[in-house]
Each structure stands twice: as structure tokens, then as C-alpha cells.
Length: 243
Image (tube, rainbow, N blue to C red; front, side):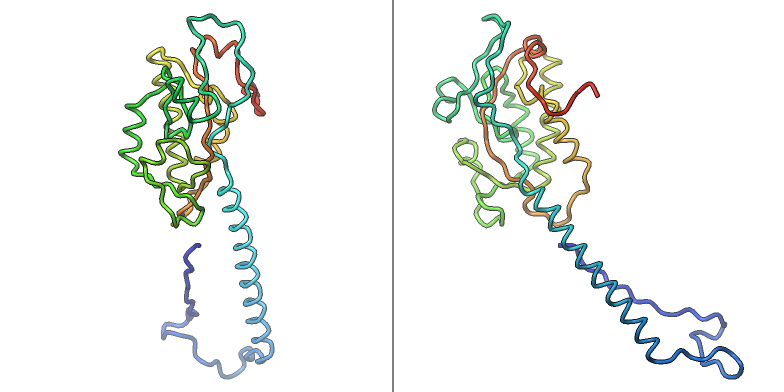
């Protein structure tokens, strides 16, 4: 996965004449061949063990990244309380058919069915156009999902590269600020502190070079309401936003 760099070393002479020359006379004797070979063997074994353990740790790290679920399926979440008809908005159900019947649209940057009031088609279109993302049906990136198929939101799983995963996080933050500044309703994931922690981990970890697949995506269904309503009905998180 990582390119191998071969570095050649040559001894530097302490004399002005170039490489070391044999030292005749009373100087120290040349090491015995078996000692020299033993030293070379020790270096070789140490290097080999380093490569083996490095490969193991790299494989484990990539395996973890490949199994991150990008979005949270909110089906079955407890209904909002203390809300009025003015600020309550229905969720998108639990199937593409129900979502369409409720006016929801599939947001490809969130990989969620989103209620009408929380849709930001202009922002989504800009991210999709600038990113030129690619999605696949398999983790080996052998079978491409055409965008016109992906935006139907009927796939069970999709695989994408790390750069899309990072863009998803920045998209979420930009969409949140746009909603707050425009006093627009907010989708549930944008009120989730767990999602912030997830994106923090994703963005701060070193980017992998030549990575084709970095994330496994399972689409879901979200809810949408005003900030005033959410602040009284915050989603349950494993991480505390007060610590």
C-alpha cells in the first residue's frame, strides 16, 4: 500500500582522500567475518520484523476505516415532545416509497432521505459538481454506481473514497451554518454530537495515499425541525457535549 523507498548508505571517510582505505600498522584489527555477518543478520531480521508489524497495523487500520458507517438510520427514534404544529415536521419513514410520498429527497452528500424543509439542493449540487465523487457497489471498486442511480436512494450499501468521506463532514458543517444563518429547519444528524466526534476522527487522521475505498455507506432516513424544537429534544449521544 505504501511505496517502498530503498536508501543506499555509504561510509564517509575521515580522510580527505575519499573512502576509507585499509589501515596498516598498529590500528585496530578488521572485525572477523563471522561477527560482521552476525551484525548484518541482526539488522536484516530487525528490518523484516518492522515491515511485518507495519503491514499488520496498516491492514488493521484500513479495515477499521472500511467499515465505518457514514450515516445513522434514525428509524424508530422516539417522537418529538413539546412541539406544536408550526415547528414539527414529519420524518421520511423507513423506505424510499414512504420517503417520496412525504416529499423527501435523497441527499447524496448525507446519504439520507431528507424532508423538504431541510433540503439544500443548491449546496448539495455544488459539492457534487466540485467533487466529482465516485461510488461503487463493492469495496474493491470494480462496479461503479452511476450518479443517476445513486440519487434514487434505493441502494443498500455504497463504497466511496476517503476524500468523499471528508467532504461529507465539511458538507454537514456548512449546511448547519447555512441553516442557522437563514433560520431554516435542521436535520437530526446536524444536532448529533456523536456525528461531530465521528467527523473529527475522520478529518484529523492522516490521509491514506492512493486510497480507492475508505468508507462503507448505508443510507438512512432523517427528521427535520427547527433549532428551538431540537434544543428541547436533543438526540441521544454516547459522547457528552459538556465534557
